[in-house]
Length: 120
Image (cartoon, rainbow, N blue to C red; front, top):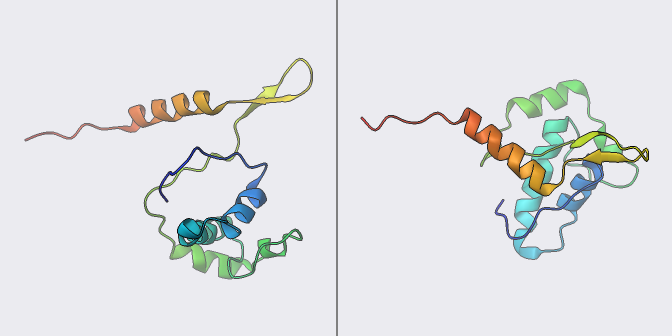
């Protein structure tokens, strides 16, 4: 998927699944449905069952889920940050990394794992 606008935050994986399945943008519909299928396969859920508020699509026999995962290739490589919670604040509210802090963290990981290629 191409990044046409800033990222969105979703409360949980179900929210992200609902967004990918019910995309309003006709130009990105195919990309969103592809991500929907990849996420469902990754989670071991039934991608052919439409997601709804009952979350029944989340149930798939383990043998079918394993067969789906064996065939999955996500390209281009995609990173989905599942949890950025860093703890609770003094007021008891959950605190987490914001977009700028997460961007810095990811860039740091990319620099750490980047291996220079010899020019020979």
